[in-house]
Amino acid sequence: MSQATTGTSVAIAAPSLQIFEGHVTTTSNQIAENFGKQHKDVLRAIRNLRSAVEADFYERNFAPIQNITDLGIGRTRQDPAYRITRDGFVFLAMSFTGKEAAAWKVAYLTAFNNMEAELQKQPAPDAQRLQLAQTLASQAGAQVMQTVLDAVLSGNTADWRRARYLLSFGYDQSGQPSQPLTKTVTDGQIIASLPELTQHIAKGDIIPSDTQLAALASACTQRLSERAQIRERRTEVATPTPAPTLAAPVSPRIGHDGKPLPPGTFRAVFV
Image 1 (cartoon, helix red, strand yellow):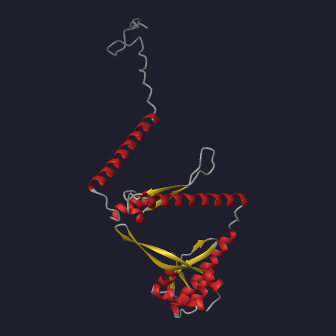
Image 2 (cartoon, rainbow, N blue to C red; image 1 turned 90 degrees about the vertical axis):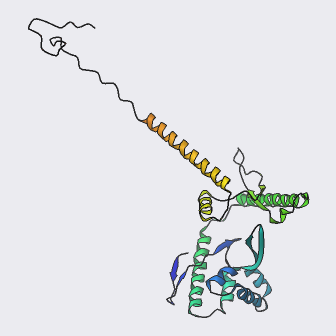
Image 3 (cartoon, rainbow, N blue to C red; image 1 turned 180 degrees about the vertical axis):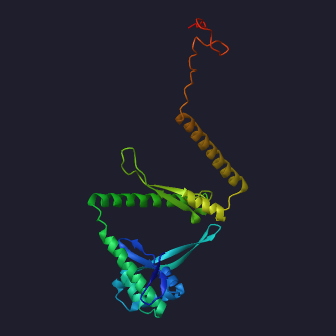
């Protein structure tokens, strides 16, 4: 996040907001972190607002969510949190006092204004695109439901509680969206970009065996060697072979020893 300086002369980082269902939002976790508060205290303040505002206002601006925390060894924990709109933030932040809190209020409102202005510049989706999105979302939901049902009802394994799934979209040969697919991600599979995979291995975030690391290094070395050979062949093809240089013809008045012949004599030349 970039640094910002408000009128209170407190240098802070610009808040990171998210667009959710067409609205600019933040979360209770982000607010707690930025304002230097315990998340449980922010949750308490949000729940206390339920009796201070109308029910429909509260439900529109404070949506309960769950943060999933990875505990390792396939275990996870769900922690309660809230997704908060601009109006919800304004009501919540009223009780936050202090010089730094004031700076964060200004920074948040500025970020809300900027992101909402950018959001308004985006063209509304046309009816056909909206219908396609709704169809794909419905198909994806059906795929997820069927995959999870099959995993739970199979009875072959108890690991379905920690299962991960990959939802993918694609196109057929005619360029039309194909049926969404849901695939189980097993413990031995990694979903990461190549730069992320390199960082994970370097930092030890993932712990492959020596055999797996050796196989990965061998495959990379082999691929680098193949690319080097391809580049060498391309260089050889691109570099033209020089034409042979023909020796200059020797005058018939010059002998085989390279010395001039006597006047009136010539060296025999056969073609």
